[in-house]
Length: 213
Image (cartoon, rainbow, N blue to C red; front, side, top):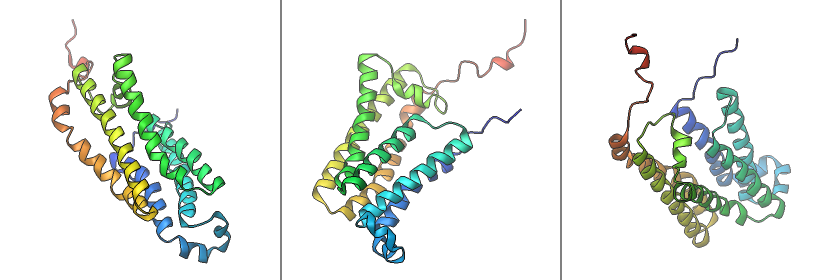
């Protein structure tokens, strides 16, 4: 009988999430040098296109490793990966960097809209489905956390629109890699009081300790 795959540590998950972004940043930064070392890559176009191609490859590797280690891929990384492949492919095929710049805007609007629709139309906090493993909250906590995450996704979409439309491509790449993740970590840290207030024990946590009869 095969062993049940163990959940990845938070450090490993962060590395798998940040890895493709770092590859994107490095390839975009040193694109000219990479193209000089491998002339065949010049057919892809400028450094942003080299970075996009490397981003897609790194994302595929990240998803593959996640599947190998956990035998599953969470919904959000999977959707993000699909969007990278779609918008990255359009960027390379049409030689238009607008598509890869629009990707964060569209995916954050998708996530934010999904959370809001589920919360207000169906009265269901969708984050409960995604995060019920590591977190155990009461209903009020799930509703508040879902609302806050939905708002944050729209904030990220707005921030991406402001940056890519008003600053250089290199500045946008730096923002995407080195600003978005820290902002997300800070946002998550500010949710600690809510988590502490609304955390409950899993219903079956003490079932095994209950005396028989």
